[in-house]
Length: 607
Image 1: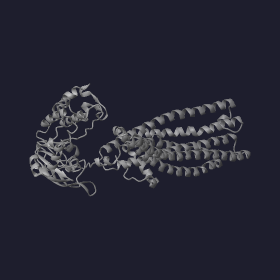
Image 2 (image 1 turned 180 degrees about the horizontal axis):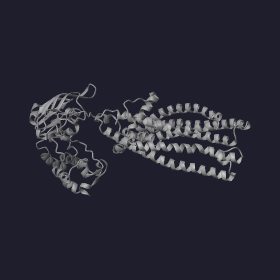
Image 3 (image 1 turned 90 degrees about the horizontal axis):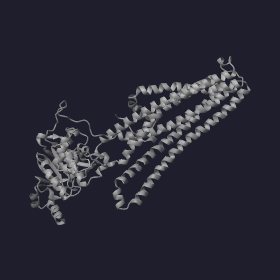
Image 4 (image 1 turned 90 degrees about the vertical axis):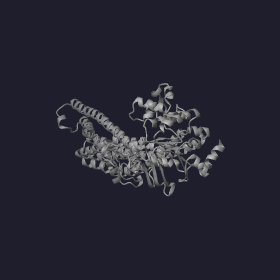
């Protein structure tokens, strides 16, 4: 679900855009219509019971001073009349207590449900974003959007929206009630609402600006924290603790300063309302005292208006607090919108057989790969691949070699559609990969990277990655890749829990699991990106034996810096600055005495 279609900085936002932000979230609220309607209905008895309490207290003072009171109290003694008023007051207190508890629970429940829904939708959206986005966006910034920003958004639903409605209803009920008592005093109180409203709007605008900057600083703080925790080994080895602490201190000070600005504007609103409330009480005492001297009102009515002066500005103060919450919520929506507006990987696929469940590419064909005049640039006009034009035959084993930055990994990213070619086409078995759904394409291509990422969980789940495979299939994939003995030697075997990123395994063991992860999926094309670089000699021999079985009747692309490991491939493609400069077998390229021969001789000399 798309939260919004436009994003602007808060400084340039209009009220119209603010309400559009709120209205764009209504689809989430509609999921809980009944609960929200019940919460709104409960506001009516809550407001009425609160509004009549000052009148009851005023009537008790009128009785004690033997002034005119309600008709049904005139025929009973003062003691009985006070008891009746006490009972009525107690009933209103009980009603407010019960209804406020129920209404508060319902609103908070709905707020948490909506928060969970927004977070799930946002997480789904983030996991669908292209790799290009993650390469330019700090992880801490994403974490802030998914946690604190979503929580701020949830507060808008949990207590903000219904709370503002409650305050408005309460204010309206009070205004109607006081006008039935004495219109001049009522006008005095109402006239003070105008400057209060103006001051609230001004301070809230300033709060909005400061709050946006505070959240930006919080994103930087989280990014810095995440980066240092992830790279703590490098920090300690190179003794960067003091330097990083100083960097963190500067960011922390910036965040504190922005938060101080939000606190100042929020406090200014509370202080302003407190002073206006005191002025209102003073005005009521002055004008009410004149009316008492002129016998226009009695002491009970004056006391009621003094209480109403406090109660009229209490919901205004609460309204201002909730308005502050709304400003934080608007800021959160803006930042979430910024993330939601990031284009996800295209869902529109040109499918040859739209009504068929059969896969577009078939494993039986073997996996011919063709790069047809492919150009690719991460940035405009800065091409890392230029005019690549080659064919890898079905079942052929091909190695990609070249200096660092030659474009080897970029070829793999294009083949898996992590990026799209700037120009040209990539075909598998004669089908343009842009016409193949990504899920099917990535299932057909098995990729083993140089650095293996393991999730927190048991060994089985790190092989299946959440897909439905039988335990027998898991064991077969482990046996095929020669890691079954290693897994069985673990404390709980396949049920052994791995720490975050597989911290309780060696680099070689993690790489072995990556091979099993690919083997169980039985891909048609196998890609090895420096997949054996982190293995010791003994482990590598196990992998080489596993590769003999894994590479049978499969097209394979192998990226390796150690040229001695690719002597037996069918063909070697040599890249330089994104261009294909040489192609042939190991022996043929050595006879050519070109770039490949130079790289090989340098490695042999180094050995």
